[in-house]
Length: 325
Image (cartoon, rainbow, N blue to C red; front, top):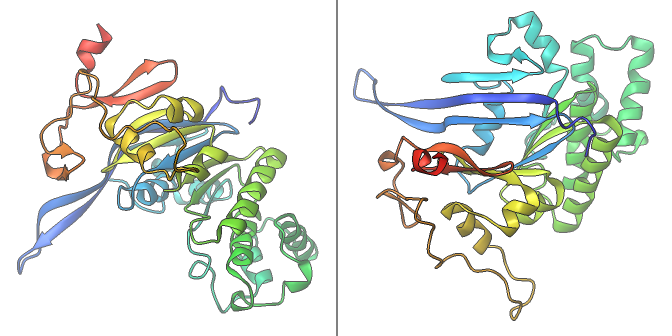
C-alpha cells in the first residue's frame, strides 16, 4: 500500500446514472432504471478499493460512469481535484492518459484484427506520447512487464489463451503510464490458477508504479486478498464501506452479512460465522420491500444515508438522526 494514502485521488459525490424506460408509440419515458443511485466515496492515492455485489447491482456501470465512458445523470466525479464530467474535450483527452480500464472479457475486449503490438500501441500513437523510434521499444517493454513475450508481438489475439489475453489487456492499459485503473471483473473469466497469477501481477505493478485501483468483482475471496478497503453495492447504492479486515470480521449491514454467509466453507466442520439468521441491530431498520427475499427496488426507502459507525466504517442507515445524537 502506498505511503500517500491521505491524498484523495478520486472523489465521487452523489453520482447517479439512470436509464429511461420508454413505452408506447411515442416512446414516452414512464420510469427509470436506477443503475447507480446516489453513490459517494473516495479512493486514496495508491489504494485499492474493492467494489463487490451481486450481478446487476450497478458495479460496472459505476466504474464506467466514473471514467466518463457513460454520461452521468447527476452528481460529480473529481480526479485529482478536476471535475471529470465538466472537462472539455482537450482536457478529457489529457485525463484519459491517467485513467484507464481493464475489461472483464479478454476474448471480446481485444480487436481480433489488430496484432499485440498494434493493440498495446494504439492509444500511445493516438496521444503521441512516443516518437516512431521510441514506440516499439516502449511497447516491447510494457509487454514484458505484464508477462507477454516480446517475441509474440506480431501475433493476433486468437493465438493466445485467456490468461495471456488478459495480460495483453493489462499491458494496453499500462502503456499510457496511468495513475488510476478500473479493474472491471478483470479476473472473473479466468481459471483459478491463472487468476492468482494475474492478481499478483496487478499487485506488483501497483507497488512499482504507485497505481490506484478500483477493483470491481463479485468474488469475495479475491477482493479480500487484493483490497485495502471494500465497498458493498446493492441495487445501485453503496450500503457498507470499511477496511477489508473490519468488513470481513465485523459486517453490520444485513446485505453484507448475506454476502459473507454465501462464501463456501474451507472445511465442512469449520466453525464459521453464519449471519443469515442473526437478528439485526434495532437501528438498522430494513423497510418493507427491502428485505433479501423481496427486493423490489421501486419500494426502497429513499431516506437512507451513509453514517460512520466506527473509525472509517460506514453503513447505509435508515435512522441516522438517532445514531448521531
